[in-house]
Length: 200
Image (cartoon, rainbow, N blue to C red; front, side, top):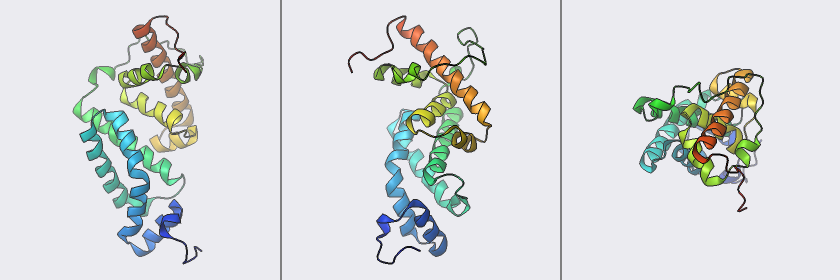
């Protein structure tokens, strides 16, 4: 049990959630909000590319979290659960507004349909930063989200699968295809120029 002398701000996420469930006091939820709102906003902005929409989305996501916090089963960490809700929420916004409608259809002529082909992570990790940002913005929102979850949030395949309600093999396949698309977009935009950031 947590010592009474322990400051609220020093409580772990699980301890904060347990106290919130017990007391239903807003102060405990505020702790979670202060810890994660900036990160959620950054993820919303990376998906929506609009500051106003990102701020609105952040508020709506935390309202959703507040309404469902007592249902959180802690099978994954709170941050994993929160980030999966964030990405799914942003994907829904993009789809509803039809912002990237033309990018939802896979361009079969540009994507190699080889389920056994492995695309190295270096395709993304060695790409010049400004180019990577451009290419991520051109990917379908679902592909962009899954790459951000894997390479920015460093989530495990198992956690991503649980978050998106898919099998681990389906997640692996989507990540592979997303990397193929990223490589194809890079080749289309920048030709055979090196993907490595030689300025680093």
